[in-house]
Image (cartoon, rainbow, N blue to C red; front, side, top):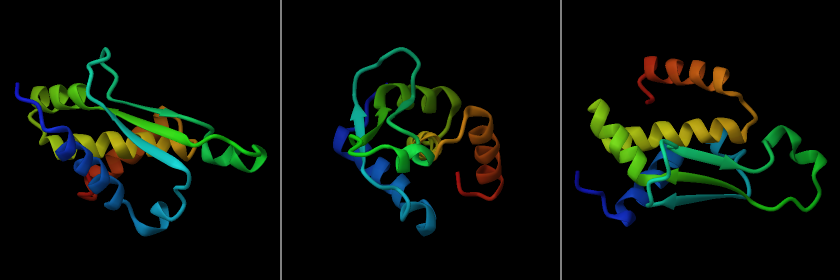
Length: 120
């Protein structure tokens, strides 16, 4: 498997964020999107921070991070036959769901809805 150049993968991540509806993008504050090019198990992405519903109670909170694991996303895309940009978008949106405080069950429901609507 050949790897996507890191700059191109970072562009895919930015495109995924920009594809969110404006009313959702407007609510994303103080989050750094990171690309990790190393393979770290089977983890596709990781949200690290204080979920958005708790932010009003935290003074001087550090920026949240959403890390996307490039090699794992690429391997998953190749395994499933999904285009890499679409896989990256799905992972970014999933982690943004955690940013908004949604658990796995709710995010999976949203992913099915988004896929049905042609968003993913």
